[in-house]
Amino acid sequence: MIKLAPSILSANFATLLDDVRKVEEAGCEFLHIDVMDGHFVPNITIGPLVAKALKKGGVDMVFDVHLMIENPDNYVKDFADAGADIIVVHQEACIHLHRTIQNIKSCGVKAGVALNPATPVETIKHIIEDIDMVLIMSVNPGFGGQSFIEGVLPKISQVRKMADELGIELDIQVDGGIKPSNVHQVVKAGANVVVAGSAIFGSEDIKATVEEFRKNSML
Ligand code: DX5
Ligand code: ZN
Image 1 (tube, rainbow, N blue to C red):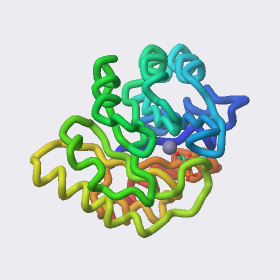
Image 2 (cartoon, rainbow, N blue to C red):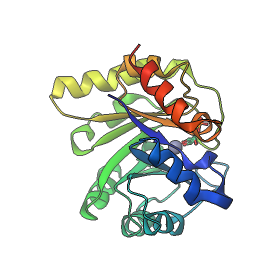
Image 3 (cartoon, helix red, strand yellow):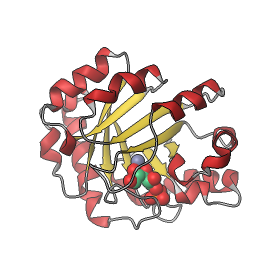
Image 4 (cartoon, helix red, strand yellow):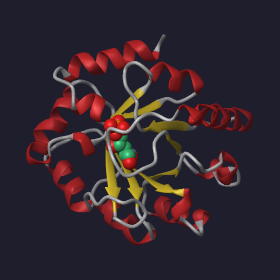
């Protein structure tokens, strides 16, 4: 069974809590919170205040914080205090990746590492046993609503193989351009956590779309 992680990037920020309640009611497990700084990626989004407000508003999902920022160490504690359950940093943004992972874990939060489409899986070989989740980007980060890059599919299988060979339990998340029509491809490759922004929040009938994701993931 996959875990679905709707990305609030495609929600309506004027009615954010109501939008999030809809995906929670539809049974989505993770809430994917996209944090962008205008440096690591060309776009700017939100900070810990918004995560904190959603927590305070009573949202009871796994708060999955995707940091697309430079110097993520400076903000790890703020997001942990704001209610993050898992913090994902980009391999490309971390000079001392092992240290950053330890920093996240020392805040009592799960740790994940994201890889841009052009970043090889080998770059996380030596820290894979220290983390809870690998995020394979299937678009170049920065915006919602982009097209899925099929070339990343072998990377998903490669990470799953690495985890199986080590005998570790690892969540493999895929993010970018995922729709009910292609979800089976990423799940077949070995992913078990699926991010979807525009496909879920842009849907007229969120419940039906969530069901379609689950049904098609089992194809
Ligand atoms: C891209 C973000 C994604 C994005 C996904 O930079 O990390 O989480 O919101 O949106 P869709 O599903 O519309 O590609
Ligand atoms: Zn994301």
